[in-house]
Amino acid sequence: MTDKYAVIGNPVHHSKSPLIHQSFAKQYSQNMVYSAELIPLNGLEEGLKNLQALGFTGVNVTVPFKEEVWELIENKSEFSALAGAVNTITIQEDGTLYADNTDGVGLCRDLTDNHGIQLNNKRILLLGAGGAARGVIQPLLEQGPAELIIANRTISKAQNIVDNFTDFGNISATGFAAVAGNYDIIINATSASLQGQVPPIPATAVTHETFCYDMMYSNEDTSFIQWAKKQHAFKSIDGLGMLVEQAAEAFRLWRGIKPETQSVIKLLRT
Ligand code: ATR
Image (cartoon, rainbow, N blue to C red; front, side, top):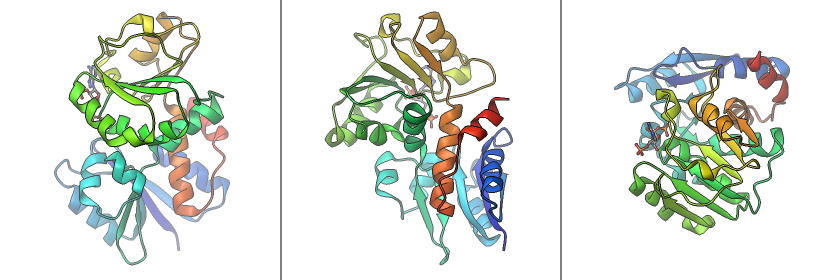
């Protein structure tokens, strides 16, 4: 039987997830299909029920449903429960839903395996405190950074994250203007690039040794990547590798196979 998977979102037509998962499936001769399913903005619960009824066995979740799915599904991984956001759902044989979040694993694998950036003992500045940021905090802290500072436009949201994750490592919150000193790694988890904007942190946060990472990606440089290049960051990296790596981790959860990712990243770049 052909297993059915999908990414749900609104909008979703731009999603590269079908191409990524179909590439993985082809590599390992998996009998599965993977589609993009548009869900009405106020129709998440019904949309998920429809997919269940149609026999789907796994679903990835993209904007704007990652937090709403978290609210909806009770049965979730410890990590996803803490993160407050879901990007991967497994529809189990008894029909129940199990929620997980592979974004943080994806980010860490892209940084460490694909770009050779060790996070241990590093000073990391994370911009943003929405679902995208929350999904990566615990895996980042598990890498043992010297400190993880979360800067956000709304400081109380950054502080909430800190309160949740304080047991996992050296983590603190601040506003953009109050960002002090410089960082080994700056990760943009805000959606500011979508509006062509850049979080207004001091340029002094970047040195010629800083890695700047935008969790967003687009065919052209995002506004954050343009800004980082202007500050002469050591390296400026977009989130395409993270996208492929989070998909690979979802594929591993569903199919029990950890796919090779380099060829898929290369395929998407071209
Ligand atoms: P996502 O799921 O992509 O994280 P979200 O939960 O809506 O989306 O969070 C968006 C994040 O980007 C938030 O941290 C938001 O800041 P606020 O918490 O202050 O709203 C941040 N953000 C959005 N637009 C921004 C902009 N133009 N400048 C700086 N930060 C921005």
